[in-house]
Image (cartoon, rainbow over all chains, first blue to last red):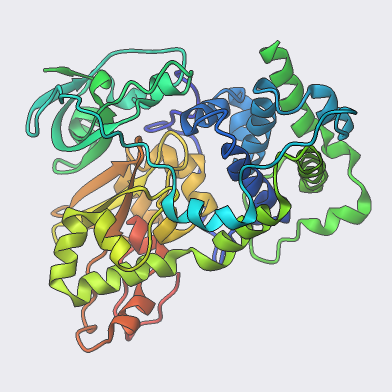
Length: 219
Length: 237
């Protein structure tokens, strides 16, 4: 979706504010929320692409006004209701509906270390032929899907070069909507800064974007 | 309906700050120079997240001890010191550096790191001619196993919007002025590949041990918004 989250190349967002000796979490609730989201991921009722898309769906004005964790709180509650983990009434009252059997959480304390150490790989060991080869000139497709996509607007319609083939990965643009993993090759595509931004960019500079087969066409 | 619910939620998150209990309003102190714009009074989110955690716990959906362990991991165990050790090893051992640049996952695993949000790592090397910097324009992707959770500026709109269109201006704001001869490569983390910048080894560090080298390496240098300073100068993060 052409949302405000896709902000590469935009102006007017203000100065970068670096904070000295920044804590990992500024408030305890940020840490609790961070952990709650990881723990609920373990139910396997959504995927990382779906959770990213849920954040993108926070209305644009809210998205820009909220802090990172505020956005994630709004999106998380939304997902919990959508996937049937909680009802809106439970969120509003804070009390679980009566007479529901208590479940067993999939992420128990003894499983945390393994989750952190192994992660959740999104590469797929399936034989899918690459559509492009290293060194080939490609073009970012001029597409504007209303749903989730990892093809940023600034790369659409632009010429780039396949710099490296990273192998086969889950395709977020379908996976986010539970339309299948559609595994395909991911590349590092090098876009000359002047191709993206014109003469104002320095002549030798470039932006490398990770794109999937379905984001590209031969040039 | 989804839209209605979403409107309700975002409105609730942002508006409910009005009903703050005074005894909780101290929860957000500014003693660490924290300065990003908060329109929401955080003590409200303190209450809301607490209520959500209780609800999910009572329903048996999450294990509180697992939450504590996750927070402890990212507050105390995983952070930029991990990446600094990788960088120091690469500086001290040319064969390791080669492995890091060709197969970062395996090389980083040799030192004992890897996993969540660093399942597929790529290391990019800064030289006197090439400067790499990393961004995630679409969200906030960051290599957790080697750098920990990202700082607020990395997740913020100013950095995400400008890093790709004006990398030299961004670097200048971080105090790094690059000469026109240097090629700037910006890596936008649009997939599940996570980037670690291997900074240039500073002059005057030839006699340092690997441990001393690691102490020079900053988070910002490994994101590519700073250089590693020579050892005789004061090092700030």
